[in-house]
Amino acid sequence: MQPVPEIVAAGDFALWPVGEHEPYGYLVLNGELTAAEAGTAVMRIAGCNDFEPEEEHGPCPTDPLGTFLHGLLTMPDLFAAGGSSFGHDPSSVAERVGDTVRLTLDAHGTDGSPVTELPVDQVRKLVAGAQKDLQDFLSLARTWAERHLPAHAAAVTAALTRALDLAPTP
Image (cartoon, rainbow, N blue to C red; front, side, top):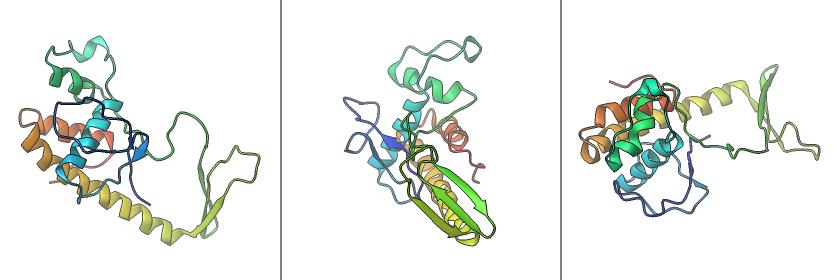
């Protein structure tokens, strides 16, 4: 189990260094990403939240960096597209059955969707590992932001913490 944002083509993105990735692929988030990979992850999470905010979030800055980061820095409910979040099926489901967790790839599928069954304790360990990967990524992203976005580092780190639904790290 690994936390992954879905990566789309970076195109001519030039606000900070980003890595080369296949469009519509995934980037595993952890504390071992290169600076370019961390930049790609921050770009993608900011891009997921790059939409016209409500009036109460203030006017959008006019500089390219401020414009790109505005949604990430001002919207209260942030998200990061990843996993099987493609805007269409499959609709994955996890259900507990006694001491087992049943993971179904497509709960609405009619063609016998793949099912994986794992002991509850193993699922807990997998989830704890994914949470650690996210915390490690957040720590790396803080250092990355201090270097590449010094004027926005604290705000970007706080926004990433909210987008990834994590508790702040010391």
